[in-house]
Length: 366
Image (cartoon, rainbow, N blue to C red):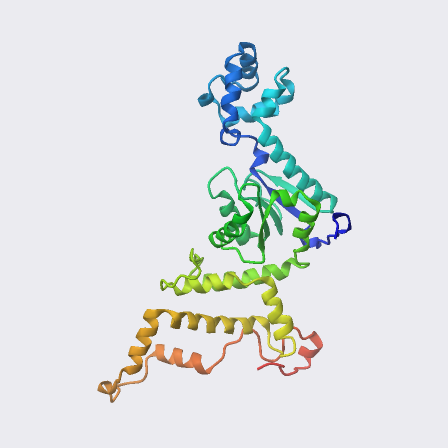
């Protein structure tokens, strides 16, 4: 399929888009790198040029150590007003201009497809207005781990679908970086992707990314709320293990890693292929699957398994005859084993229409 024949259909849920990239803040001493040393050498050799720079920026550009981020950003804004040194300025801001051009292509392409992009250089202002269900987030922001903190806040406040973008990692490193970022930010697989900017600037790459979006943001948000509720009920947010295959005894960490790693199509398979004709709601079914998983994680722990085997060998006849009733804790545990708790009433399925419910129809499940 050629680029000209590709089509993209984006739900109205995702039309309002946030693009978060520190390129909008302007260049910094770190971002211009060694080009600043060369630029300052030119300024030091030309008094007239040096004075002009000082007039525009109130900064001495003859010495790199005296140049601040603010001075660079003022110079960048005034760059078209300074004559006779275009080559030096282009060299100094070459990376900044290229990054602006790349992000500009992405923004223009989003607008061409009917989306409404809003630009942010950091978290400032990002959470001040209505929620963004779709966010393009630069991986390398000004502050260390800033993108990770923003992604976590987007998950908590907006339940956003996040497209992490970058031009830094090598292609073979993207999968590793993506998974590490997802774990540290408590994101869910299938509601987050990591895409090179070079792909997003291509028509086919951006359209492929947009076509992966679901048509209903509420589907994503309900799954995210489900996972988050379980996480919080277990005392979370629970961090994931750096090595998902580790057997160091942290059962809840391993459990939450598996839960967050479920993709949207996993829920779709359970709902539409496994349960559609069975009459059992997805939420109740999934929570029982997860209960079995948690028990298995406990029994997979070497120390727990050894303790279970040891307890199996024990006799407790020295405590007989028992004095008094069983403790309340035992009653709670035993009661949980013989009574089944459900999230919804047993008289109807959540998919039933109002007529079925009003007729007092019996449940199709249970």
